[in-house]
Length: 253
Ligand code: NAD
Image (cartoon, rainbow, N blue to C red; front, side, top):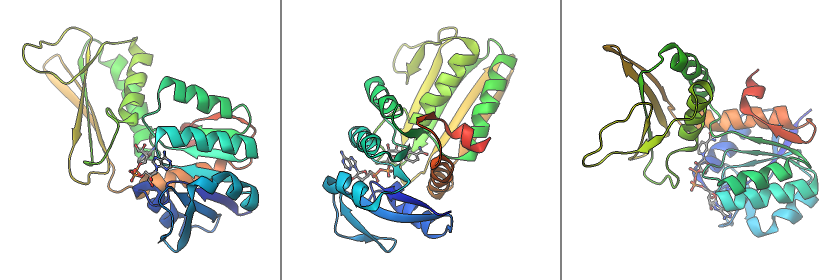
């Protein structure tokens, strides 16, 4: 069975990657693509007006919508999908707590899968971090993430996921975002650093140091294609699920 998808943010960096990756797969077909700046075609797919999203859902009836846009539009698209009975995969980051609540509301109507990162390497990094932190009890932890110069939210959604993983395994830790001036480290804090430069697709390092040694766990995304491929795997997996909230780790398992 071919899973049909609608793609939002089609003229964005990730939207273009999703359309390019979808063109290479025979288990998926693109029903429609939208952008708030429609008109051009991306990867041979006509880009329609995002204002017509609800009508496009009704006329094309896709199995899943794949969304990489912004926090406000992500919630609006999810809610339109909930009304239309269409599953929703999103990698949009920067959502507030209220935003996540709204997304979870949609998940009571349709399957919704959110992942701050769709790469297999990050999934493995998360497992490694959850193992290393308790094994290196009392070591200082510093997290550094680096992204392209147009990224809007900081720290990255993936950094926040890694910080939550650290809290899960050693209890909630104070997070110190950058340091300036007289700023000595206090016991148990986690330093968080966000760098923005060039066209870097995404780098995350968790550094653990103590006892005259240090362990650095680092992931580097070589291109955004890795996220698009993971999101499409998630879409194919999500298509025939029941309504509910799903995680990318479930796709990988
Ligand atoms: P981008 O700026 O290149 O593209 C964003 C697209 O969304 C654009 O087409 C823009 O017009 C559209 N958009 C934004 N706000 C909108 C609104 N209110 N209504 C309609 N359309 C809107 O950004 P990008 O690099 O493609 O990243 C998009 C999102 O995906 C970001 O939140 C980013 O952090 C996230 N991201 C997630 C992963 C992951 O694996 N989960 C990987 C890369 C990027």
